[in-house]
Structures are given as structure tokens and as C-alpha cells.
Amino acid sequence: MEDTREACQQHICTTYARLPVTFVRGRGCRLWDDEGREYLDGLAGIAVCNLGHCPPEVTRVLCEQADTLVHVSNLFYTRPQVLLAAELTRLSFADKVFFCNSGAEANEAAIKLARKYSWDRYGAGRFHVVSMKDSFHGRTLATLSATGQSKVHKGFEPLVEGFTFVDFNSVRAVEAALTDRTCAVMVEPIQAEGGVNVPDPGYLRDLKALCRERDVLLIFDEVQVGMGRTGSLFAHEQEDVTPDIMTLAKALGNGLPVGAMLAAPGAADAFVPGSHATTFGGTPLVASVALEVLKTISSPAFLEGVRSVGAYFAGRLRELQARHPLVREVRGRGLILALDLDRPAQHLVEKCLQRGVIINCTHETVLRFVPPLIIETEDVDRLISVLDEALGEETP
Ligand SMILES: *Cc1c(COP(=O)(O)O)cnc(C)c1O
Image (cartoon, rainbow, N blue to C red; front, side, top):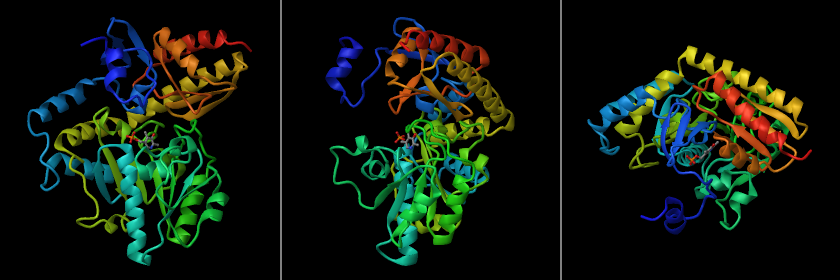
């Protein structure tokens, strides 16, 4: 075959503007390209490889299960799926889990469950969902309709009916948007794609109280910020609140495609045989891997490590802010961190890449850092020094 990048242009739908690197190998926080060059990974495949690349214990479980049983469909019982569900419910507010293969699918399941819950109790017509401006919930038709960014909608109208968007971090805006047709409020505990926006303390708790009052289900999309990313297993744990429904995906399988929708007692029972389905969801292969991932990430010592290196990283970002006036703000929690710049930031991603460091830009002006959660302070220092250099080349 011809050159990888040319072949990609030729044979793969061009839905991505890819960076000019072909990766062939990964280990921990390091990646290597096809020319043998080493990179420090500050992105983790977009907050997916939380245990780093190819962690030995996960690889061992993956290989053993691949050699035992990969898939039989959900027409039968399989042990790893049940063990994973039991562990997810033990570690959360939830009563039951629906497994799928991606974040968008988990959110599809959440939206369907909320509609069905409402339909069971109140009949037809109560299907509206209040969502947030600058949110991101996926790219299927329902989840892009739930996403509060017009650039994601453009060209795909008509959208799925019933989604309204209000300002993030405003309980009053949600209250004003609730009607007798609302079945759910959907929110990311920290908006990730939307620029790493952390709401004020009490916001999520007040949303829950409001939803309770109106018998509206509260959905937390923890696809990106769950699984240890913020220094607790689930981001909402730090806000002293639980949702009715939570969605997970990205880091749940450390790179294997697995999503989950978790539902509280009461809400979960709206799904009955025939309500929803998936061929692949929760195969023995992904479930056994996710169980191993969950075991590691849920340990208090591991989460303490995330909080500690996250605090160190945030401190070093604030040093950059003090040195470079183009940095407007440092945001984030645990190991989802960001620098908001006074200008578009994508070219800085490219500059860092040329220096062997992978970072990301989201929401135009925001540099986002979501490294593997196993990153150590020496690696943070390397990332910071490369970024410092790149920021130093900017005109004031
Ligand atoms: C990535 C993401 C999704 C979509 O997940 P996919 O696996 O790409 O479908 C949904 N919600 C949030 C918050 C995400 O970060």
C-alpha cells in the first residue's frame, strides 16, 4: 500500500483534520511513530487511555478473555458482564446498567429511558429534554440534537424534536425552561469539549432538587469526566449529589469500545424486554477488561494520586499564566485541565507535537490536557517546558 496518510485521504471519510503523525506503538504515557520518534501523551486518546497505553494487567486480561470467549450476544447470560454491572452499581448510586459501545450510544439509551419513564407515568407528550449551551453529547442524530453547539447541527436538520438549550451553570435558566412536557435535564458535571467549564459549587445539587420537585430525571453525562478523571471515580461525587441516570464510555475500557448507562432505582425499571437492545453491548471481552480497569481506578490510593498530580499540574499551569499574558484562565479539576487563551490555539498543538508532546485544543481558544491518569510529575514538567517554549514564541 502507498503512504499511510495518502491512503487515509483516499479511502477514509474525511471527518477529521488529522495531525501529521502515524502512531505504531504505545506504553504508559509514551507513544512512538512510524519513524521511531517518541512522544509524551497529554491526551490519552481523548481521555480514554486513563491507565496509559497497554497497561500490562489490562493486556493480560484482554488476551486471556480473547482466548476464552469474545461474544455470544445478549440473548444469553455471560459472567463478565454481570460482574461488571454488579461492580458499577456497588460503586455508584445506580441500581441497574445498560451496556453499549460508545458515549453517544450511552446517551441515546439515557434519552430513551427518560422518555419511557415519563411515558409510563404521564402518557405521551412529555418528552422534552433541557440541555446546556456548549454541551457535547455525541454525534448520532438524537445526541447531536442534544448537543448545544450549532456547528454540530449544521447540515443535519431536521434535528430530533424536543431539545432546548440553556446557559450552563444557571439553575434559574433550567427552571425557566422546564415545562409540563419536560422529562429530563441533561448535563455534564464538567463540560469537556465545550472548553473545560467547571460549574459553581451547589449547581448540580440545586438542579437535582429542582428535578425532584418536578419529577424530571437528571442525567449526568460522565462519558469524559467519569472513571477517575477528576480525582474521584465519578465527577459528581465531589458535588455531594447523585443523578437519576449517568452515562459512561471513553475510559471505561481503556481503549476498548464500551459504554454504559447507569440508572437509579425507579428510573431503571422503565426499560423492559424489547425497550432497547444492542448486538455488541457488554461482550465478555470488553466487560472483563472494563472490570479490570474499574478495579484499578476505583482504588482510593489511585484516586489520591490523580488528585495530587492534578494539583501539581494545575499549579504549573498557573505559573505559565503568570508568565504569558495571552493565557486568560486556568480551568479544570483533577487531570482534566485547560488553559484558555486570548486567541485560537490549534497551532500551539502543532508546535508541541513537533517538540514531541501531544496536547489538544477544544472550543477554539482552549488548550485541553487529559493525560493518562498515571502521569508523573517529571512528565508534567516536560509538558510544561515544551508548552512554555511554544507560548514564548507567540506575539503578545
Ligand atoms: C466523547 C463524548 C461523548 C461521545 O462519545 P462517543 O464515544 O464519541 O460516542 C459524549 N459525551 C461526552 C461528554 C463526551 O466527551
